[in-house]
Length: 356
Ligand SMILES: *Cc1c(COP(=O)(O)O)cnc(C)c1O
Image (cartoon, rainbow, N blue to C red):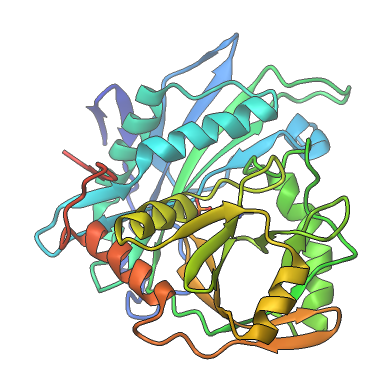
């Protein structure tokens, strides 16, 4: 069956997999919804997007993204309220960040209208895939990659923009044991750390595997020059509570500009918390921990929203933090963010994009 929605062609699957999904038991990213969106860039412009049954795509092994790494992605979430209203969290901001990533990798920007229509059409088609239980959501994964088949080193002239979605349950993160990384580097200033490009993940796997072998869940990346300042936590931004203030490393070109990070900082200020975006040194963590001033540490990202950190290992020594109580700053900002998303609190910033 083919129907036109907006100007996006929709080709529905004849065989939905929806009935095979156990919505009470969703591992992150395990199931991909029935449909995907595909648009192609060629001859200097983006062509018409189409919603197609999710499945394999035939491609040459010579596509430039495989060899030279022109590939970027996004990670965002859609929610369905009990009354059936579907919202996408901070769609505009995700679009802006995606275009910043694209620019850094010499890839063509996605026009806002294409982005919005693509998402809304795809999510509307797969609306029954959005879980409704508390804390559950539809994870959205847009990806753009170079698709020109050619072996010579060059900026690709062809790209594919694909969006997939995946129902995800509430993310209960057990308190993490993290290690301050002082040997390996995820990104250096002037590099592409701020871009959500595939290569940033490729280079981070090895040090993360090493840390896992030593019994850690993740690493805390430090600056590439001196390993003196904290950058971020594995695949999340990192925040600390020091002397009752919410402290986070200020953004550099080596740090991913997290939308959860920005949301938490914005809400924390409105909660009259003192917020500091500045350099956070490894030394400061040791000193403030010894003084008892460092009371909380947590990761911030779309998947977990807030992931408590229980132990920070620095130069081989464990610095342990008390379990986050209900009155902790991380619990309070998480609740505020969740309530705003659910419409229990006013969305003063227009962060909830509502599907018509
Ligand atoms: C995506 C990502 C984050 C978190 O960003 P959100 O927009 O909050 O999901 C943090 N660090 C890295 C390296 C990331 O890729």
